Length: 366
Ligand code: RUB
Image (cartoon, rainbow, N blue to C red; front, side, top):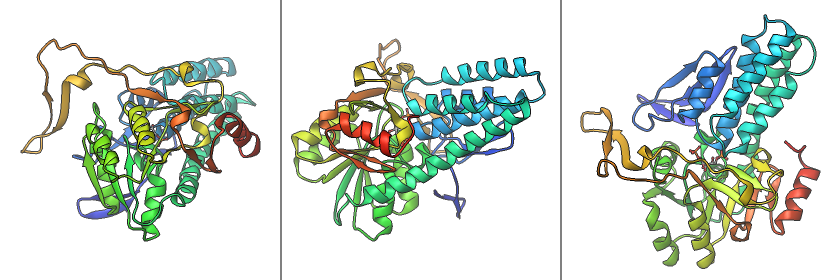
């Protein structure tokens, strides 16, 4: 992604591996401060996922894979039995960080499988190679989603997106923002509404920042404004990302996605979900089986940003002792979804059959 830091423009990935070290953009500080975190072991990588220094389904999948690779490197001098126990325990720690985005679990499982063959040295090599492969697949999938999704975007379209399913939620490009990036590069005259996405404001802090860096025309809107623009006929298309898609097409994504989908249907606006194969979970038959992360009420009671002197600070916006609930995701039933933009093209209804076919033809089941 293109990032302008102190007047210098750079191309960067959201996270990458350097030997036993994982490096990542610290997303908690954006857009106010740009810092790269250095994570020296799998415990630190797990903590970075938990505290959302890295977030977004694709990106935490890659981070989970890197975490298992770090554990394998950390255990490389151990006897085989201890190596296995160490890596299995590290995988459990990484699994326990965030429950909804399935990319994390698929990446950990793939790396664990790679860590299960050969001598310790071979297992280390296979695990690190698998983690790197997941990152490259993520990058490749985002490019292809950009290509296939851009066809849906016509000149003059006004597109609404929710949360951040951009480069920061992936290795680069993103899922929902990938087609938008491509359409903009193709010279189409487009405009993006970025939902603020309370409580953590990923739309305000991350999506708006990404669009600004790329020079794509946009406006930040509060979450409650989406219906207003849809009813007035000022939204032509909605594209969101996903954290887990069940076999029937029910989709878990950032809290507030469901109501945008219902509003889109009510107003006759196409509603697309952009997500790679890694985000589908065929073990979940319907959205009812998807575990929804509940986060701290503090995220609802406080907002964070910079004051006039540039100090990063939190402000309590509610009375002390306010009871708040904070589900991080919701499930959009498949009937509200027009199609899934994937790395192998667009999947259209009937989803149950066409999702199965997608995995039969194009991908191994993750
Ligand atoms: C992120 C979120 C994003 C999806 C899409 O939630 O809901 O829309 O993860 O991700 P959080 P991707 O910020 O809580 O992790 O673009 O990687 O598929």
